Structure formats: C-alpha cells, structure tokens
Amino acid sequence: MMQFSRLSFLSGFFVILLFVSGSVFAADIIVLKSGRTITGKILSRSDKTLEVEMTVGKSTATITIQVSDIERIEKGENKDVEFRKRWSALKPNDLPGHESLLKWCEDNSLSIQAAQVRKKIDSVKLLLLKEKYPDLWCRPCEASGKLSCQGCEGKGVKVDPCQRCAGSGEIGCRACSRKKQGSLDCRRCGGAGVYERFDPSKGRKVKTRCSTCSGKGKIECPTCSGKQKSKCDDCKGEGGKKVSCGTCDGQRHSYCKLCEGSGVKGNPEKKVLPKPGETKGNTDEDGKSDEKPKKKPVIKKNTFG
Image (cartoon, rainbow, N blue to C red; front, side, top):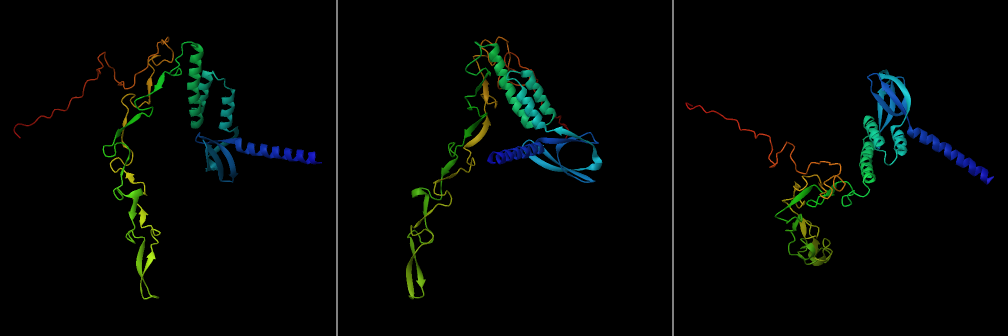
C-alpha cells in the first residue's frame, strides 16, 4: 500500500513538473499586420486585447496587444530552448557551427546567448590552432598572441598620482589631527566626563555624568569616524586622475613578441597584426603619417580699415 501511494505521488509530481515546464518553455509566435513578430506566452485574451508575457534575457515583461493588429498566432518554441538544443549539439572544435549559431542568435536578438557563443568561438579558434601546430603553439601567451599589459597591469588605464595625497586618496583629518584614536573632547562636558546641573530638590548644583560621552570625556570624530583620515578633496578619494595607458593604448594587452602575435612560434602563416598605439592613417617607414596637416584659415585684413 505504501509503494502504491509513493508511486502515485511520484507520477503526480512528474505530471505537475511537465505541466509547469511546458508552461514555462512553451511560447507562441504572434505575427502582426505590420510584419513584426512577437514571441511570448499568452496570459489572457479578450475580444479586443491580448496580454503576452515576453522574456528578454533574464527579465520578463507583460505587454498588451490589440486584437485588430494581429494577423495570426502560431504555436512555437521558446528561442532559449532552441538555443540550448543547438548549443548542446555542437562539437567542441566545430568552428563553422559556432559561427552559424552566433548569426542565429544575432538574428533572433538573443544578446546574452550571442555573447556566450562569441566567447566560445575564441576558445574554439585556439583549440584548432593548437591541433594544427601541436609543437609550435606559443606557451607563454597560450596561443592567443596576447599578453597582459605590464604597464597598466591589464587595466587599460593608469592613475596619475594626486600630489596632495600621493595617490592614497586620503589625507589626515583636520578635525582630529594629532588626537588619540581620532577622538575629540566632548562639547557638553568639556572633556571632564561630568557636568554641573541645578538640582531643585537639593537646592544646589550637583555633578552629573555626561550622557553624550558616557562619562569618558571623549567622542568619536564625526568627520572621519575615528579613522584619523578623510577623503582627499583634490582627487575625490580616487588617488589621482585616470589616463589611458600609453604602452597598450588602452587595449589592456600587448602582442606577444615570441610568436609575433600569431599564437604560433615563427608565425608560419605570416599573420600581420596592428601594433598598439598605431595610428589609423597610413604611415611611412619613418613613422610619419601621409595625411597633410590642416592649415589654419587665412583672414585678410583691410589695410584701409
């Protein structure tokens, strides 16, 4: 009896799971009279309007469509489900298949999936290069032909240190300078920890413990919160001004000299890559551009005023 109830429970659970998964992944294709297609799940419909839930990446949105604008409704499959089927069917070294999938993602406005395929294509190219040249592919750059820029540590920008804070982004707090542990004398009790107040029951002044500083006579500096340092006003706490790295021209990497940026020692395919910082215009052997400098406009003066 227990086995029968357990089996019935499991069968009911799988039926519910299939129903939920079908409702999540099943999608309808709504073709409008303008030619635009909308893919989503129909939530409700009436004689005049149609509510559709659309999925864009990881976010969802509900839109209302006028029935008069709809030409036809086709039953379709969620694009994300189709993408996963195509993605799982690809072989690790199938470069044309990955490129075809990338074009399909771009045509169907799947930006997140397209970025995933684009990143995979780079690794597929490296895999094919290593398979083609098993003994010659460059180990220092992992056959990518690129190395992290040492000038900017792969950040693409350098920080020109602030002269005031020497690049730290912080300066000594002026409010509590040369004070112990970033503290200040309590203003209420003057640093004594107690203050005098008039007690009407006794008819005279009595000393009372200060509640502001809890009798310590010291309070935490409100400017720096006891850290004894505050944000530099000149660089706004950034340590300096960010400038583009001159070594890599902001590209965050430099080409590997061992493989000449080809990923293979000796560069057997004679792959030519532009160097970082190279100008877009044509240059001669001396590095001078063939573009003529722009002349300033000549303004003729009237000698007679």
